[in-house]
Amino acid sequence: MFEGLPVRGMLVRLTGAWTDILTRREQSGGYPAAVQELLGEMTAAATLMQANIKFNGALIMQIMGDGPVKLAVAEVQPDLSLRATATVLGEVAGDAPLSHMVNVNNQGRCAITLDPKDRQPGQQPYQGVVPLFGDRHEKLEKLSEVIEHYMLQSEQLDTRLVLAANDKVAAGLLIQRLPLQGEANLAGAGAVAKDEDQIGLNEDYNRIAILAASLKREELLELDAETILRRLFWEEDVRRFEPLVGDEGPRFACTCSRERVGNMLRSLGREEIESIIAEQGQVEVGCDFCGAMYRFDPIEAAQVFLQPAIQPPAPDGMH
Ligand SMILES: [Zn+2]
Image 1 (cartoon, rainbow, N blue to C red):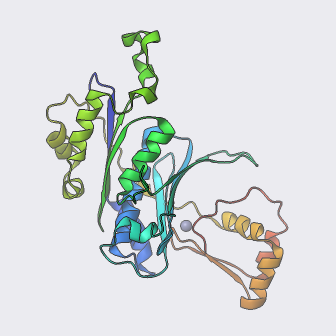
Image 2 (image 1 turned 45 degrees about the vertical axis):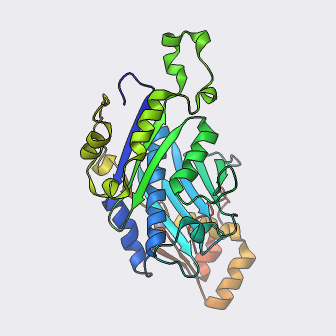
Image 3 (image 1 turned 90 degrees about the vertical axis):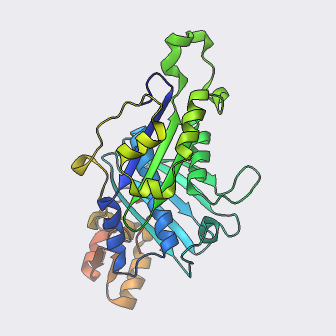
């Protein structure tokens, strides 16, 4: 918190949680460096967003690309356990910019989905979608800019994000202007302007956002939180909270299960499953997030259709 100012910040530094994701991918060849960087930035950003809104359900950030990276997904649960994966078809240069990976024809999209924990049958998750271009249709080359657009649209709040990732660390810094409601007694209830009228106008926020934006990629990756905050905000009155680490902090965990795979098979339909069995003798489903492999022999596959349908599974990360 910035004492007395309508500004808050949050810093995330994923180490083991991030390398767990990369290690699981190594058995199938790993990611090209540029994809690794994109997925790491998405994972850091999704963690910041989940911690920021404290939503009681999964926060899922997806990029549906129109280039060699068809899909990239980072998913963070309310307890900050997380997983991420990307589907890459074709070559990606090590230093490929964002648009070469996911926005070749300006058709790429970024979706943020909030999937409530106890979703009722028929209830839809909330989803917001933003393009990967700016106000003049120029291709955005930073994921942070895409997400800043999303936050401005969905929350009407100024947000500044700095993101970086390599093969060891995925990190991010978020600075956000607080909504005005909390200040009603200072300004007088009638004097409180709408949050959206304040966009870009709060001087305290603007000053702190400019300081945050001066943070270099290498600094974010290599320095600890204490040092980063001291270097950027040494003139500000910052109140720090205890970092969330270990079982309370961000960590890798996959939510896949045999039951969920069974639901997915059921949604494909009996005919489709029978044709796979006729061809291959069994059904094999792999989880792209954790590498788990689920096998159903003909009897097990038939049993799937004896259970009543529950709800359609999320269309994610299974092949
Ligand atoms: Zn899994």
